[in-house]
Length: 283
Image (cartoon, rainbow, N blue to C red; front, side, top):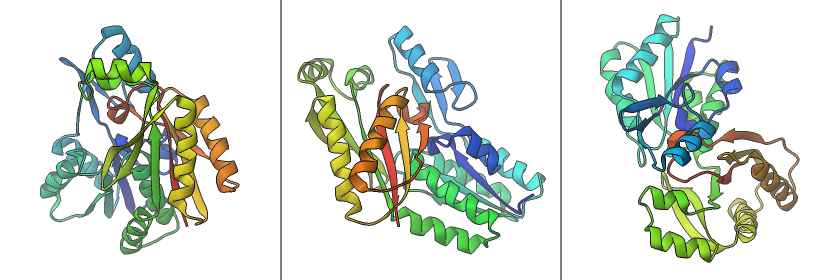
């Protein structure tokens, strides 16, 4: 049993096999359809989420884990023999998750719990968790692990594209009339994670041009620096993510295997189905 245990939330978009491999504790984001609540990664995934959305014609809301959820996670790792806990959370700019974890600390004043604001989301948060997990396996100290996380935060590049405006209109983030015109003109939003937020970077015409623009942005943002890791994100569109990966591989000239993962419901509910994107870690 590792003496340092890792805790994160499901907005880290980590594949289940890696969560199990590194014995990571995941605290679920809640998805709420009216009075019905579903736990991400336990009771709902992207496929089920959009089946329910398309059937009910309404978007659910999301809720961050409560301080009590984090208290249970902290208690569990210490009950299982951990001496230190490192909790890496979704960006505090987009979620109350980080603050909930900080509030949970009040119950563990005599324990070594380190709560980190990843300043990221999806696999850009997840890669910080995985870097910490690898460091734990190497026998690194807590201080060394925290330094490794901080270093990684400056080497993350996150972009994505939406194939449809339908779900933005459903959620009220775009007027239905504007979305209708946008669909007619084949407007495709390009997203970028910057400053702790997932924001609209620009809009392009046609899905083909959107995919090409994602590749251009990868080339521009890495500015010739060697690529260390590539994670491909998607919402019910693994084939599209793999096609994008092939284009990135050709444009950037790396020889790496991608980590392919779902965006996960806590995030995908805000973008819609069909999304593709990537997280690139440069050296």
